[in-house]
Amino acid sequence: MFDILKEDIASVRDRDPAVGSVAEVLFLYPGVKAIRAHRRAHKCYEHGFIFLARMISQRAARKTGIEIHPGATIGRRFFIDHGTGVVIGETAEIGDDVTIYQGVTLGGTGKDVGKRHPTVGNNVMIGAGAKVLGPLHIGDNSKIAAGSVVLNDIPANCTAVGTPARVVKLDGVRVEHVQNLDQIHIPDPVAQELERLENEIKELSAKLEAKEKENK
Image (tube, rainbow, N blue to C red; front, side):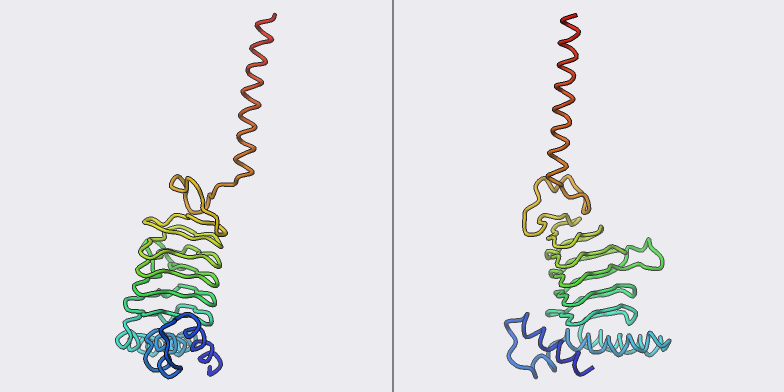
C-alpha cells in the first residue's frame, strides 16, 4: 500500500504543475484522499463488508466532494484533478494512468442491469464536466473533451468531443465528415477507395453494355 501511495503522489506531481510539495499532495489534494479511502472501501467490499465499505466511501464523499462506489475497480496511478462533483458508479472499471477532472460522471443510464457503468482503458484523460454513461468502453490512450456526453464506445487512440460525443481524431489525425458517423464506424480510406473503384467499374460496364447494344 505504501508503494502504491508513493506512485499516486508521483503521478500527481508529474501531471499537475501547481504542486508545491509531497506534503501538499498527501494532505491537501482531495483526489488523493478519495482514492486512498476507496482502496480501503474496495477491500471491505470484496470481503463482503458492504455496510463498512459504504460508510468509508460516504465519509470520503462528504470530505472531498468525490463519490466513488466501493464496488468500482480502479487501477494504479489514478489522478483526479480538483475533483469536486466527480461520481464513479459501482460497476465502473478504470485502468492504469487515468486522469479525470472535476464534474466527471462515470455513471449508468438506468436501462442496464449487471454491468451498468463504463470501462475505461489505460492512459485515458476525461475532461471537466464530461458524462460517460452506460456499460460502454473507452479505449487506451483516448481523450474525452470537457463537457462531452459519451453514450457509445470510443476506440483506442481517439479524441472525442460533443453531445453526444463523436470521434474527431484518430491516432492524432483529424477524422473528416465525422458528424455523419457513430463512434465505432470511423472512415477507412482503403475501403472508401475500393468502393469508389467498384462504382466506377459498374458505371463503365453499363456504358459498355449500352454501346454493344447500340452497335447490334
